[in-house]
Each structure stands twice: as structure tokens, then as C-alpha cells.
Image (cartoon, rainbow, N blue to C red; front, side, top):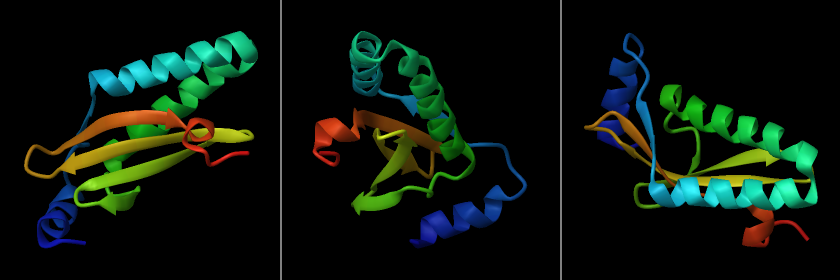
Length: 113
């Protein structure tokens, strides 16, 4: 954990949650994935949307939860049945903000056969 993140973590114990902000691209990814699900397995779309929302919301309290990918980028794996999603995000310490940059289905990334 870098020094800036460590100081944030110590200060965080008595503070509010970090703000979670979705990029336009991440919202497009989510909408596209849910549209595909509505066509193929309609009953799974609503629970998948709830799982994504819940997992991403948890980043407000635990912004360092996801694994570090490269530089400031992190990814959070969101399990959902046989497949799931991966949220790519960045935690902007100084702004106290989690910036969700992309949300993709694991199947689209080649993680599931």
C-alpha cells in the first residue's frame, strides 16, 4: 500500500464513504451486458444488475478491495452464477472518489469457456 493510500486508510476509520462515480463508458458496458442477458436469460438480468450495484457500492467503504492491475488501476471481480463481471476502477485518494472506468462480463474477456 503506498503512503498516500495508507494515510487515507488511517483517516478513513472515522469518516464517511468515498464517493463512487461511474464513467459513461462503464454505464454503456453495464447496459449492453444487461441487454444481452435480457435476451438470453431474462430472469438473470435483474439479479445481475443488483450484484454489480452492490459490489461497486462496497468500493465506497473499501476502495482498495480490488486487486491492483497496473499503476492506479484496480479490478474487482463480481461473481454471478457461471460467469460474472469485472469492474476496472481507480481510487482517487485526494478527491476521496472511486472512479469506475469499465465493467465487462468475464465471458467477454475470455475468462469463462
